[in-house]
Length: 203
Image 1 (tube, rainbow, N blue to C red):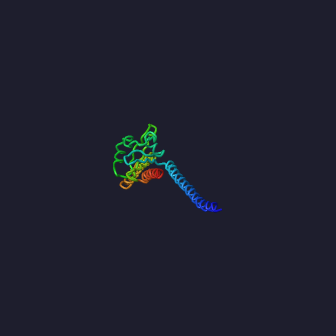
Image 2: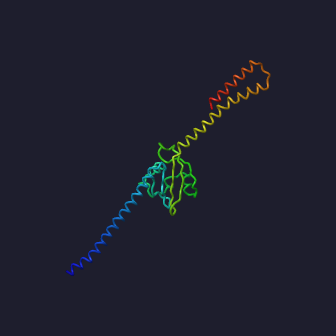
Image 3: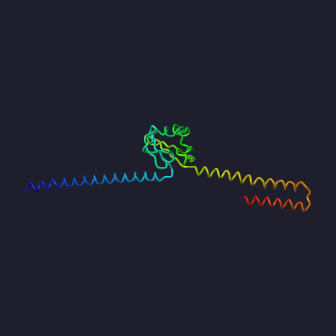
């Protein structure tokens, strides 16, 4: 019948349009989900970083930080969200870093409880976006300790080496400047050999 033919003609295109719209909606939802997954993985990676990351808005308010950043600065993101970083961290060295355009790292004391008060962190500031700031902090306590131990070791070795060298030089001057009998020469040479062996063992 004519009415059935008309209905078939009009319903077919609408069905195709409807299926296309549904397909586009499904694809759009999948794209949004994939984008959300990427953002989630990105934040998971930042959380796993051994470095602290703190994001500040244009006014210097805390927008977000990872777990290590919270540990370095004793930040509670729920409590301190949108707090001015300068109100929480009153260290003059830190405030100078925040107010300057410098991007060189600054070594300073970690903020927090007595448990981590001896921790030393390196802080670097990076500008991004429209006036926003990323603070990157790294625990350098062990590096500084290793450097201190290295300096002590070098100082101790230098001191230990100085004594046998002084003794050796004294014996050499004596042998060069004095007429010595064979047994005296042998005695001095034996002492010099002893000091040389001491230096060898130190090395």
